[in-house]
Length: 417
Ligand SMILES: [Zn+2]
Ligand SMILES: [Zn+2]
View 1 (tube, rainbow, N blue to C red):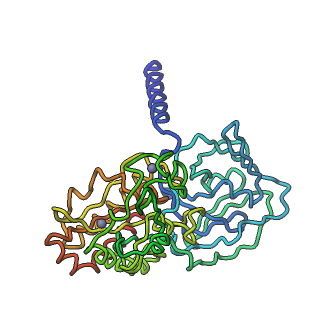
View 2: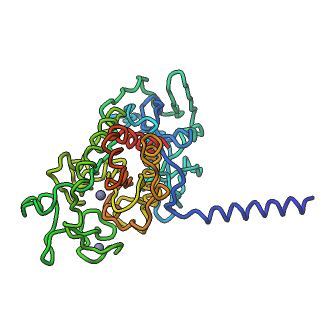
View 3: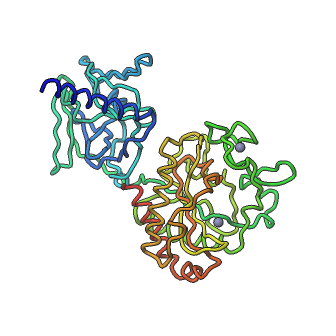
């Protein structure tokens, strides 16, 4: 019997070792959402998150609540230790319940080799792009933690720390998740002046206008100019390749309809063009993922939806699959997976809610080299909605409002799943 138990224990340990080694640093382990529960430490409000029903706080944020937070590089460890000499807790500024963010995704949780020590004890932690999250519940080691559904309250009381005066959280109705909508194509390049081309972000190279397909590896603002990039697809893309006759108006109409619905659902929508007289480069289009179109800022968009219609033999709607080793700045290991989930959610809505059929099983493969996938800092839903050179055109013309609603519904599915 004892021998049997030991064997089982050994087998369990082997299994644990196998699953531990299967996860690599950066692998996505879950989706972290914005919490809708007002959360406090000693009555001081703190930003809170949620992962599969677990209430989380950012370990680094505890520095504002009476803790010493120390990163020890050689140990790959973050030490969070109560400072009992604390006489005043400052707390973070502007902690509010962000109404339009509640339960929507804000980060991917990724596997990391970093250990978080709370008062010297290792605790379960989740990594998000350079910062660590821990369960609010862990603070029970240093005091009490209380949850009240009725009061929409979660709070830790750390023994020996100053206690503030409780006040209900202010609700922020202004800050909304940002969605970039890109009605593909636009004004024909033959109608554009040189000045227009420059303003729209195109370059002149080797006797022609166009743009670079990639950023230099690891950047999101420096054109590859032919090398130092992932080399996925040709580096140079001539401006004329993007010229279309019928498509600009179809794409714009679908995008404007989607914008209306997304705004009703509580998103801030940024359009890459709002008329058929514009033809922005991809460099300019992806700048809408950043505050103030500043490619050197940190992107603030949740996702990017590229809206096209197909041609050249076929019927129905599909998304273009991201596939490849993209290496621009800001993206994480889930970029391909998230992009394809987004495309799939939207396409499922389109085929379920409009008269358009599914094309190619819903996903188009072999086009992962598209410029947008190489340049965008946030996940991309790349849609090819119907074939405008087939009998789909009458559906596209009659149902653009429903198509817009389906796009918006797909974004909702992505943000809540
Ligand atoms: Zn290149
Ligand atoms: Zn197109």
